[in-house]
Length: 234
Image 1 (cartoon, rainbow, N blue to C red):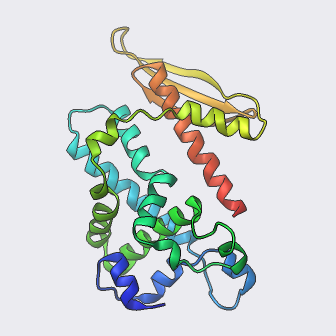
Image 2 (image 1 turned 90 degrees about the vertical axis):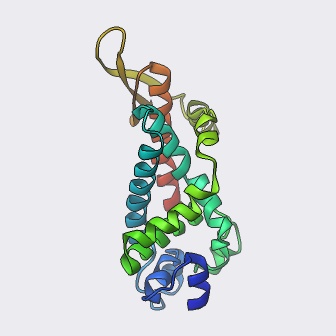
């Protein structure tokens, strides 16, 4: 793997090139050539996902200091969902350099939201291990937080309930059902926790100051869980 290309990608002078090679290795390559690469990017993706979530959460917590948890949760979900991260990966032309099997590459591998977003998170994990938290933060600020107007994004209405319903209908599943798990607080300032069930499984939970927002948060969590499961088939 070309060091200069990785440094252009990350915006940093790197130290351990092997970390980035691992971050850009899709597991399909191991199936076809198990001796070529010892490890795919899945562990680095796990680490990068945690770092990304923390950096984004802290940034919007400080920027929107007067907004409640529900607002912050919805905004974070818009910034770190697979579609958004795949867009950041495409901005970096990441799909062109991900190492994957010829079979995956010849279909939709280089444009797959799941593959792109996973590699993007793995790159964050590699930067953190190689250069530390400050470098990872700078990368996230440049490629995620700096590419969008956060206030405009926050004001966009995403109907996660509709997305979840479409997901279920595409697979001929029963419709999602929502159930209030808990209510707390005085009558004028209640907090609702709602669970969403699909195919008899509880797949998401959301907490907000009204039932509609709690349902949207629960649906968003369910979609994250389902798309994470979907990636295992790629």
